[in-house]
Image (tube, rainbow, N blue to C red; front, side, top):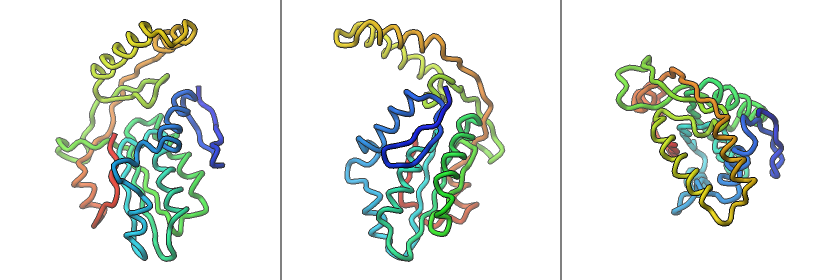
Length: 214
């Protein structure tokens, strides 16, 4: 169910499913899962004093990772440095939420943070920037929306079996999982796709400091 949440960091964001957004928030902001193996936006920012930090978030979902990058930059940026963020999300329902989250949380920092929201997927087999591809929007679990529905089905089957056979998950949680899975509505969506190389060339992007793809 859609709603608004206020993070412990003080910013407000819109979600499409609360349990999923809580999981993503914890993964991105608390566990810092996206910045491992010596990947650090702060180090990139430090290395680019008085210059432009460029971040591409491909598969941005509702924008939590994009917001994480923006906040890291604002916390640690030096005078004269700027950031440009390109956030890609192909599915309209998710893209609309992404747009509101980014616009609401960057309205007062436009001079140093430029955000570009792209309603498209990246597919390097695309012949043109007007190609389309079938995606599947999972309304109960929007973060699991995918172009490969069989892969999602296989993953959910493995997870379901693990939960049902678990000795540490109580029966209530098991039934909640099964019920939520049964209630999920999977909708096919025709989405725009483009080549990443074309996007880079068409937008005169000369360097990329951080590229996240999910």
